[in-house]
Image 1 (tube, rainbow over the protein chains, first blue to last red):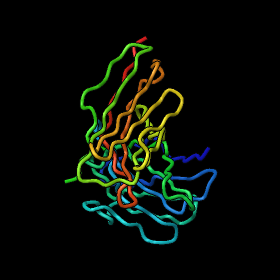
Image 2 (cartoon, helix red, strand yellow):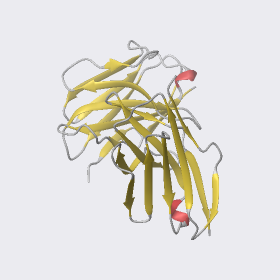
Image 3 (tube, each protein chain N blue to C red):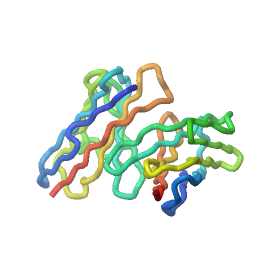
Length: 116
Length: 110
């Protein structure tokens, strides 16, 4: 089956530093990748949609200069949280959609970010 | 505004019983509806997809119904097992994006 990995699975950083999270599709090519954020006891909220080779599309209220997304290849997307603050602490989940599919997204295991 | 509402209470059931979860939505016209399972600290795992022209879908011990008139989906876990304990998410595809409900946490007691 289709597998999506994320790295790291958890990260703790100091306020003001930047953190990069990687999302990889291991056995398929992903034309489109999505980044979500989930706070405790809440639903996943879509942050941005990225298509390989083009700029990401951010949802309303998500700062694109703070959450930098790069989808440089068909198997890798990265999310960089710049100048992280404690309120950025959350569970970040990526998903990947195979090139020919409009229905199916495969989710990564998530990355727990804690900003001190 | 658009809303996806799931059973707000956690569901505790005895092993072997059927768990029934409800998903109601407003101001969406989804082409399809999906159900995912999420374990603590993990990403969602796809379970079932049901399209707007389908009334019912089954997969092993899982059954989903979809009523576009009532704007409601029911998710059933029959012959439940402790391994079924998880949070179950109702998800709509709207405008090529997935929108998630907050989930219902099911605990199956042995």
